Amino acid sequence: MTRSTLSRTVVRSTLVLGALALVVGIGSSGVTGSAASLWLVSAALTPYRTCTLTATPATTAVVADAEVRQSTPTSNFGTTAALTLTSSGSANGRAYIRFDLVACSPAIPASATIRLATLRLYLSAASAACRTLDIFRVTTAWTETGLTWNNQPFGISLNNPPTASRSDSFDAGTPVGCENRTAGTYAVGATVTTDVAAFVGGSATNLGWMIRDDAEGSGTARTTTFSAKQLGTLAQAPQLVVTYVVAP
Amino acid sequence: MALHRWQPIGVASLLAVAGIVVGVAASLAFTTGSLGAAAAMTPRCTTGPLSVLPVLSGSTVTSVTIATVPSTCGGATLRATVSNGVTAGSGSATVAAGGGSVTVPIVGGPALGVGIETDLILEGP
Image 1: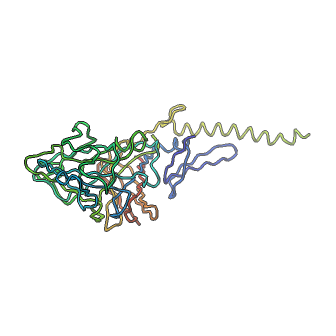
Image 2: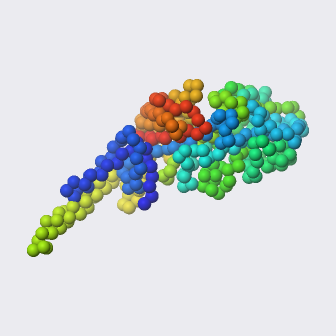
Image 3: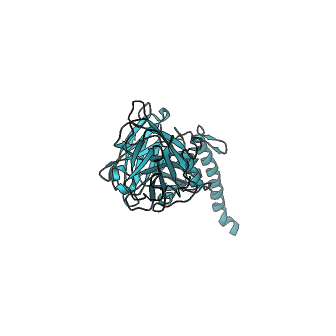
């Protein structure tokens, strides 16, 4: 029988002279209940579980992040304190980031249903123009200390991969109407639920994401900056927040 | 003779089995509104995405903000437990009638580590 865990749910069964009495109550300790007990409580309880992975401390291997710069195509910027996305002629910049989901404890079961996965990046500087920033699931391995513009998984061509293949996008910039206007706060809008579901379910390998300006090669330099793991500031650390349910 | 010795036990067993059947039927009757015959229904107030974000004071999780709670969960009690694997804190709050964002204060919250687990249960409405 499939077993599911419902924290804080206590299901007691009492057999008295052949009469089965089922008592369902709320207690202070977590228990593991059977599918049968789930039947009894599912009408009233909605369980969710969230794993929040945070790039802390700055030396953690659970999170890897790096930026690549077209202007210095053979240099590695895996230890910089910022992730800078730049759209500028032939001096563009991208960011790569990966979270090791194995660090979730308890582990997210492969059978879990991922309800929401959000990539949170702290916007430390916004462009004067509202820029669309695209997130792409990476399909080739990379390392934090080995990544460069020239060896990056998506190659050196600008605006590649195409916008249509992005996992999600969000806007950042100071103009009124832009989604993320204020530097000094976490940006909102980066949803990677489908990708994380694929990672957890095993249909895709977790190699993280690449983030780039939607329109690289801008005639006027446009720069958006996020705090990197190596900044070492907890309140600005990159995060991946995964909310899921074990039972359907 | 030996058979007679077992008769009371046999009768008791039959009563017990009958009682279980009656008891199960009674419990099914109790939950008929939520259960189909031989099929579980889960009329939860939501199965949608919930945005769950820890709020820090220094490095300690002092509350959890749950956004995008639908109005169908209005009036529900939202219980949260946050754990970093060493320390766990918990708290609860009531979802407003219209749903929306709910902040659950966490008592004894853990320090934010590389991985923290937040368990949520919407109880009711």
